Image (cartoon, rainbow, N blue to C red; front, side, top):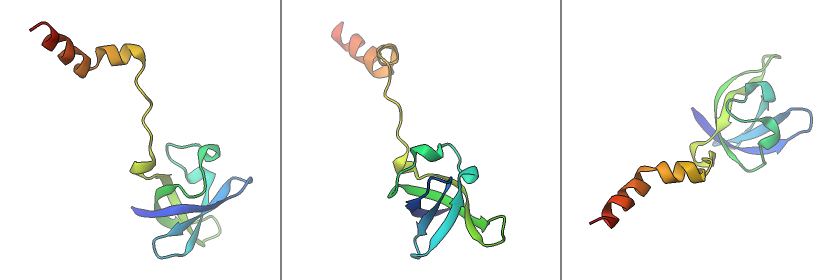
Length: 95
């Protein structure tokens, strides 16, 4: 999978990714995986495959945020209480 940076986004549902080679590659919102178009920001790192658009020109397909850009949701209070670290701390307090 290739990596690049979102260079430009439009309000019409498409954008351009600057590739590692320095060229711009078109992508359409229908090619996004695991992320909504409206949540993308210029400058974000993405991973993609090089393919062709409907018109036959080069385009980015299977576009998703790069692993470093994916943010995990924080644990809720209940999940934190059930986390192994919390259980481990409780067992050390008893000794």
